[in-house]
Length: 89
Image (cartoon, rainbow, N blue to C red; front, side, top):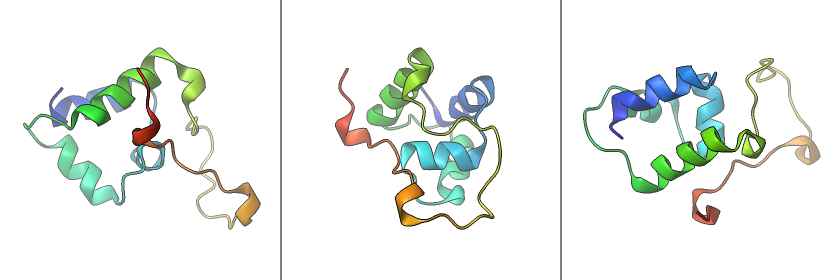
């Protein structure tokens, strides 16, 4: 999968950039934007994570329903992003 296909994947699966950043544990929107505009192959771990999220919607942490980024959350409410290192296929 090349970077430009990530944008197509994100739009097809109803993710906003902010949600996909959190889901994959990517550090900044600029990093994702550069990836989405690239003609290069994405890292295999990321490709496998995207496949897993598409095939198993229950793995999703963020469902893109309501933007609550403006709201401060308590530490107990914070959701940790899905870690690519723990992905088992």
